[in-house]
Image 1 (spheres, rainbow, N blue to C red):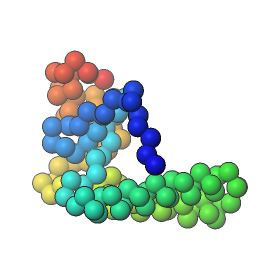
Image 2: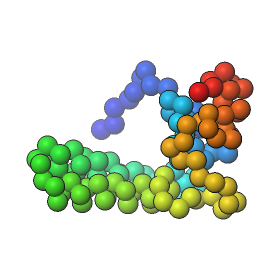
Image 3: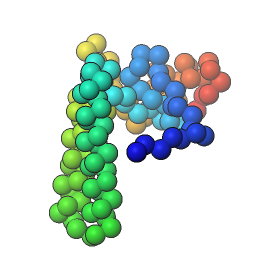
Image 4: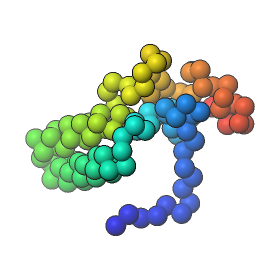
Amino acid sequence: MALARSNAVAPRRTPDGRYLVVRGRLWRAANPHLTDAEREALVQQLMQARRAVKTALHSGDAHALRAAREAVDAAKVALGERGPVWWTDGAKDFNRHLVKNTPYAAWLAERGEGA
């Protein structure tokens, strides 16, 4: 059962849809070319892997922790949030960069949200 985050504000998405802006940093968005069914299945895999990380951390099982973290990474790569970029125009990847150090700085500043 998913919990609603009533006080949460959805992160701003860059105009090209490639990134989410969270606390002044760019995070690569999921590949918009995935079908809803593909995206939902991958998100379920990601959440299962994250739960496995939590369980492994609490149990102190290093092998299980390594496997769980690899599963998280595999799901994020499949979603397009890590690994090769999902866009095809050759644009540089600014994942995890501070917005102020990227070409998106002026765009965010125009909205009064400059980092």
